[in-house]
Image (cartoon, rainbow, N blue to C red; front, side, top):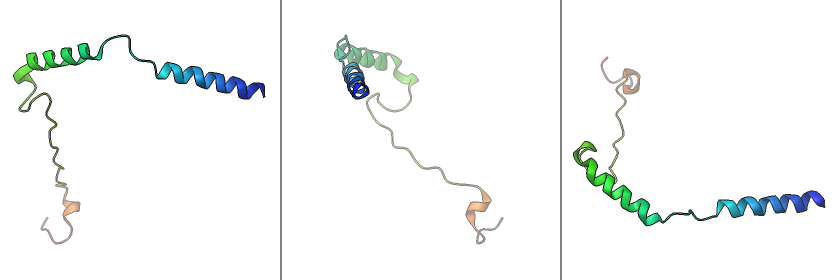
Amino acid sequence: MYRIVLAVTALAALTGAALAEPTYDRRIDEAAAQIVAKKIGDIRGGFAYDQIPDFVEAVDWHPAAWGASHPA
């Protein structure tokens, strides 16, 4: 019984620490990220800092992937 109580107490203590809020304001973090993204400018590439790029799958150019119908 002692082990169960100890395990529940430890679980409660760890859960409380994991759910704790940060001690700083998240808006400061977001504002800093926007300022840095604007200052980086053209170094980043051809899309906006808040745009998610579309990724294209690469073509397998290995001859074994072509099969027997493709001339080697």
